[in-house]
Length: 141
Image (tube, rainbow, N blue to C red):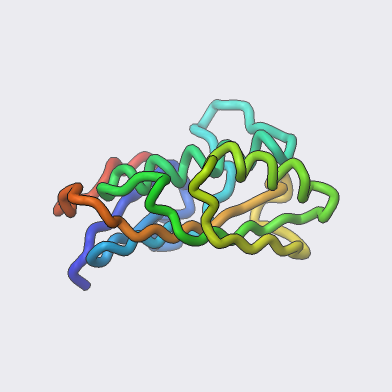
């Protein structure tokens, strides 16, 4: 594959063999992103805070591959409780502002870690003149 990869904070990336994000041409695909925190850091427990954390991780990956949150065209949010929809939606609005990507929000039976209340996938199309990176992003596990 001719593309760039970005690796983030999730220990599952190395363990399960995937990249946080992959850029092919002008398209950036961000893998399912849960509210993972650095080892030794206390996890956020509320859905709003977790969604903001997911947004931070996605932003780091997109920017690491030469894009910006303004390039995001699609999001998919996975919730474990429909009661969290308003909080997650409010955080989504805060993360993306006036960009307003196409979005889907679904309720699932569970996520990989029982503490996680939300996970998000993101797709971006880079439409400006930022260069296409040729090296991998930082790998932190």
